Image (tube, rainbow, N blue to C red; front, top):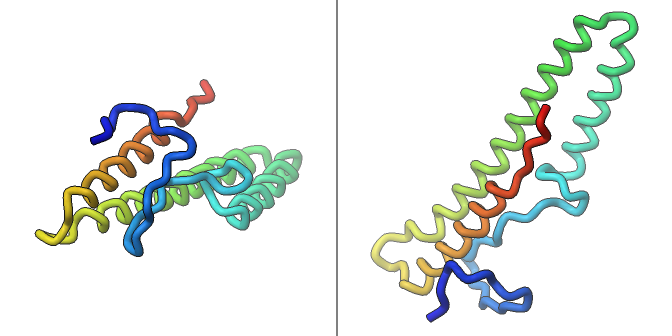
Length: 122
């Protein structure tokens, strides 16, 4: 049996079942959010920057609200991913040891992803 603490090999093949949860992955742009949401947030950000000259206080307030909205959206992405992981192993007594092993690997991937997020030092 493979040690769950060992790093996974790049070509490790795990047979996927219908109910299997895919590990958390960033979108094609590397963002935590879908491209459409990123574009929407960026559009709002550019509008805020443009308004700074005429209304600096309002621009900063709007920036605060936009950041809060982005954080909420990212929280929702992580909560949905966690809920998907939870569904896999909470199948009652019918969950096999192999299903639990795969679930633990998925949790490890998700946990590693959470810990790899960088603080920008703002």
